[in-house]
Image 1: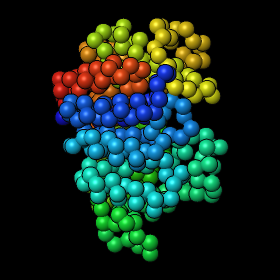
Image 2: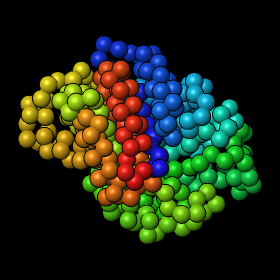
Image 3: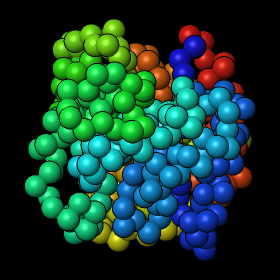
Image 4: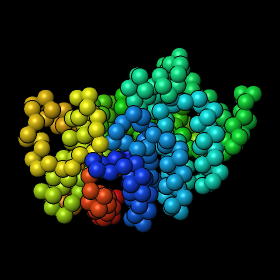
Length: 331
């Protein structure tokens, strides 16, 4: 049965705050664990009014402490923002606190604008071009016999699975060369998905961590008891994405009826492209779209994201998705 996992940005909804977002995140993780989800990943973003997961390692600890079996991790840590040693120490700490449950996904985007990126790192000499070397350095910190004189304490000798995240061919090539599992951001940047999957699988070199390719794909699901309700719930994410791409990031807005037909042709084209890896509808609609996506991609795992304004409706979406997974004909 193909695993389904959860990607959470810990959204801050209009009229709410980060404290409530963190309560909702932990509640969703606890429900997701009961419903059979495999992992719960949190994403690093900075300076975003609608995203509360900036201190990603701290929030991972909060979620892991409130659950007992589900894997918890970063999807991902934007490594250009950080010293590899600091990340090794943070995730070595998490693995020591919650052994066998921590994942570390790595991305090379800043997860912010350039002004915020400078504030994070102060010196952008260690930028995305340094990403492959930073990944190798980080892997070495976790090895039993590091080649570097500095040790990550805790970290050295701990088995923290490392993933490469990407939305282009670069990440696919790096993950294949290093023999690491690969997570593609098809939930918001699907254009090169099929090409990246093919490149990764064809170029994969086995490693100590992984013997054969493993592909996880991001997928949006907005599930409700009816197609109409699901389409309505999905408009919060649609508005948020248009706002972000228009340079107006904001808190997650409440849903708006018939939103896609109220925007201009450019915004509609953007949404059609972004939502091409999505299922929006009733259980039957979601089952059909999920099955078609898995058949098309032969994914090893799906990372489900669902940016819904109302927390109860978001829980219901993930519950329906878990039920659909159990009933998929080939799962």
